[in-house]
Amino acid sequence: ARGLAQATMAQAAENDGFAHYVREHFADFLEQWSSEPSASLDTSGTDNDARFDYLEQCKTMRDDDRTTLYVDFQHLEQHSVELADAVVSEFYYLEAQLRVALHGVMSRHHPEAVMADKEYTVSFYNMSTLLRVRDMKSDCVGKLLSFSGTVTRTSEVRPELVQASFQCEVCGSVSDPVVQQFKYCEPRKCKNASCPNTAEWRLQIAPTSVSRFVDWQRVRVQENASEIPAGSMPRTLDVVVRGDTVERAKAGDNSIFTGALVAVPDVAQLSAPGERLQVVSKIDSHNPTDGVTGLKALGVRELTYRLVFLASSILSADTHEGFANIRDDSEDVRGKPPTGGMVIP
Image (cartoon, rainbow, N blue to C red; front, side, top):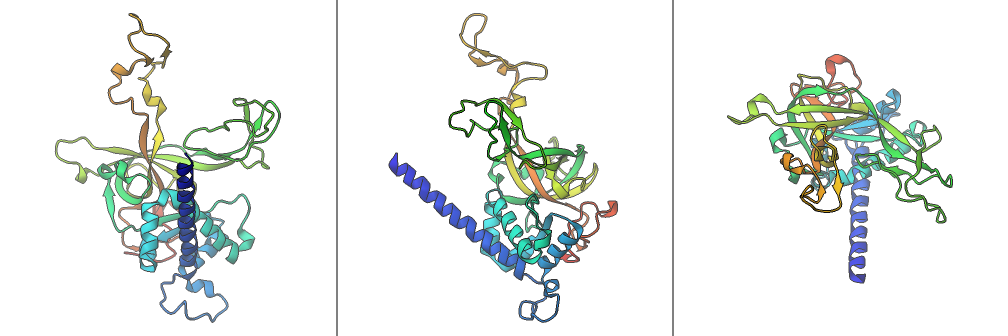
């Protein structure tokens, strides 16, 4: 047991070092990348940030009160192949580190725009490989990737609780922030050592609390007609978009989605429509099964997880070349990524 604990601590330290490496080098990339080869050598001028693509975009974020920075993945590959490979292979794990790096850049260059409750997001686009809906399988979970498909349905925009604080109904103590894991998560027990409460909680939603909501929308995407094998039914995939990315896709759009594939709990699929789950305590002639009943009629629906794509950017498949304007949010450019006038290969 002691050896296992030491191995776990060593793995945690290694992961921390890896995360620190990515955070620092990604911040360097944001501050140093320029489409002008001589920009990093020429520091003359009153507004040197304009010579660096992402510092200029940070300035635009400050002026327009936006929280999402759009990064051309081809730029990251040209800057550092090692960093790009790390982001692709461990994107879901490293996403928080990328946000911290962006927050640090904004704090250094535009401290007046940084507030304690403002959460910045990094959104990638223009990936080297474009997958199909049918390619989205469990071996892709957690990786940064892009796929194309046709939008068939979009939900209304709703608030999503992403971080919450709770007040104990027994002693009144306020819990530490609880990060929500794709479902409503409460504290396991009260942080007051003398309080036995494990179930009675009140969500704190006052402006002074640390509970945080973001815009949320679900998009149903079907594989393109040209990609469906003969004799097969079209595959579909649910895409979740948050923050500045909501309302960027509409039914009928042929779009490119960039983000990460994740596995989320699907408890509702345990039961057939209208059927109530029951747990039985003994086996008899009237109760021939033990545990959850009704599984015989469910087929493969006893699986309790399903794949969902968390999209950080949505780009129209018809806008794969030319220019896109990052400052325009009008209907005629919906789905185009903010690229600040940069050419999309």
